[in-house]
Length: 84
Image 1 (tube, rainbow, N blue to C red):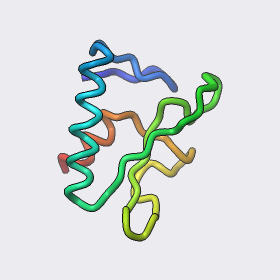
Image 2: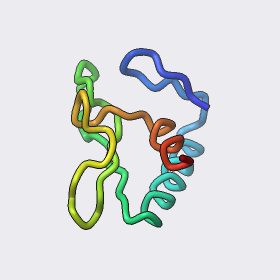
Image 3: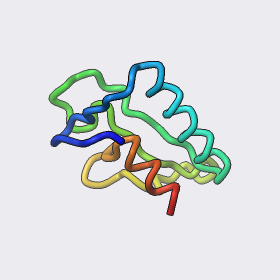
Image 4: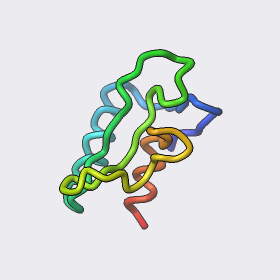
């Protein structure tokens, strides 16, 4: 599991492992007709940088991760929410 320090997700996984993990989380969300969106900002000071949100694919409505910023979740947050 990853730990979070303020705005940065500190993750011990390799890039390849993280990419696989992200794909699995996205697939799990898709089975529930949800989409996992990642902020595309590359500005490190941006509070959304590297963060995620969950969107209803048919209504295009943010389901989770829209507060306090547009993208406020780590990938592990999304994974944990899908477990509930």
